[in-house]
Image (tube, rainbow, N blue to C red; front, side, top):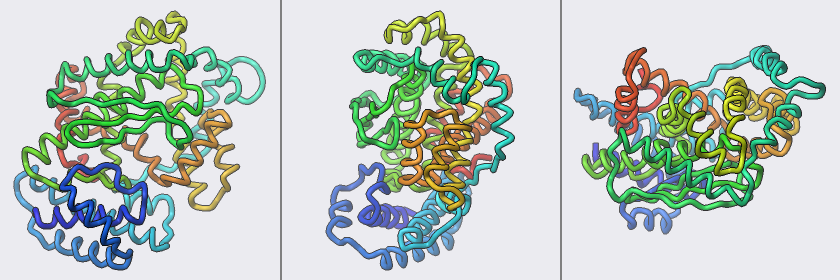
Length: 404
């Protein structure tokens, strides 16, 4: 299995020569990366190597021990996704659902306009007046923008709160840490670049106004207990303790991403269950941003309704990438059914162009992870029990089809 794992890592690094977004993180032997940079293998050669590796892993006996069995399944599904990504780079076209199944081991539900309209009808009551609901929602949100000169202070406070809550339940390597940068001209709002040795670089995009809820969202999602914690635990428990070198590389367009994004989004709820988030923001973040903390509860009541529109982004992406609508219509769909302002909707379509069906990993991933953790922890689990199951997932080689 270790031989297959090494060949898998080298294959992923080689494919990264053809796809600048593919290798999201790598902290294995430097000479393997140098070999991939020098060799610049063709897609045809990589396709042959991927097929051979896939055959080899499928012929290998499945171990009886749980973790070793999960490792076998992980390598098989990741290699299947590598194979699919190569075919895409060679020109094969898939539907949105075919692509998400091939790359992420999952398919998001298809929802009609009527599903989102029912939620919008409820929101209409929250925003009296005339004009499109998106415009009235945006008018409401303008009072909750973090001033540019306070963004860093607010994020620093949010990260501190998320980290303290995570460390109360999860033991992290003593040397773990990350740095934060503020960037522009990106299709995403935040990104974690894991660098190995338990360190991350987190970037926050300041192209568009940053609303107060994004502070905790990004601090948890990109940092604690999200991507930074996930990658640090994989490095500690799987790469260093077990010697499973395949986890030293992270191919972005792979089933691992659904777990990564799903745990990062669900981790927000784990860190701030129930009313604890509103209490934290009202007493800490709203004042840091110079906002009225008395309005925190109303803001999150509205956000709770808006969050139910999360799958609208999937529908816009599905229709756009299937060629059913053009980019202008996709942006219009997001404005109407996801309540995005025009500039944010256009940014999201740019995300579709760059990352395609990756969008399912955020909402479907969150729902699958929540169901997995809460089923195993129990319906009335204590906070500590939920953290325990969540940490187990973060430290394991589970993938979407093993979330049973």
